[in-house]
Length: 64
Image (cartoon, rainbow, N blue to C red; front, top):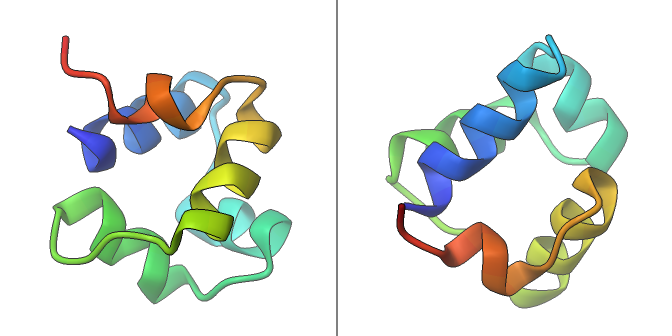
């Protein structure tokens, strides 16, 4: 669910994976893998993602 939530938040802001990667200081490949569900960010990175999107880590992990 995390990957889908990140993708939705990114797309809602009309952002590319590259733009989000730059904002979070990670690689585009990391964003791609998170969104595909192939990998998950570390706890501190999850918090940075949540802060960037104005939400919480708990909300990012929440299922629909």
